[in-house]
Length: 199
Image 1 (cartoon, helix red, strand yellow):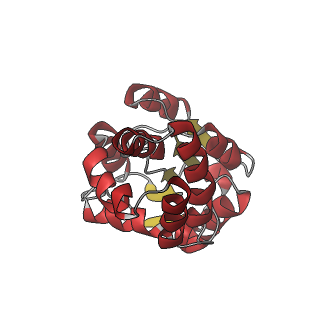
Image 2 (cartoon, rainbow, N blue to C red):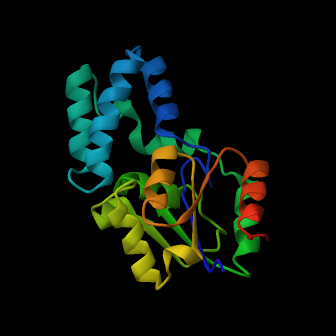
Image 3 (cartoon, rainbow, N blue to C red):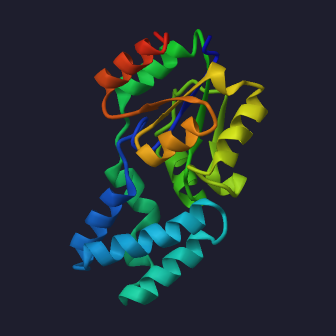
């Protein structure tokens, strides 16, 4: 029987993805989007796992592309580009009446603070947020899923994980967690019903 549901944030509870940020900044600053995305992905992985600070990440990007840190609009862009997936949040809130709900996100500290400040998690009924930047490990590393299970006192068989990135879904499955690859609200409801989860 399912007791714990683990939701991702970006791409699930909100529609923001870093690719949106890259597209926005590259259009604004007339940069090569493919080169920028590769650089961002490499450095963001370090920032999300707490190995470098966002300040260091942005400084390196600014130097590489010959722009100012301020022009990268790192903190401002989230509030400008992100929108809540209200249908998914309403579903989560209904599920919270019957299941324990936590959030597990790969995120840098500044993005996490911006997410809170922008009100993107307001009214989201959850017991806890597990943020990679504070845990110093990130999805799809099996350790992060085991950490969540151990902290919540739940077995993999009693848990469901929802994420928009297939590699993260596979990471959760590797430790035995029932997992759903999020595509849209309607498919999510259908996939959860197949697992015996309804709200």
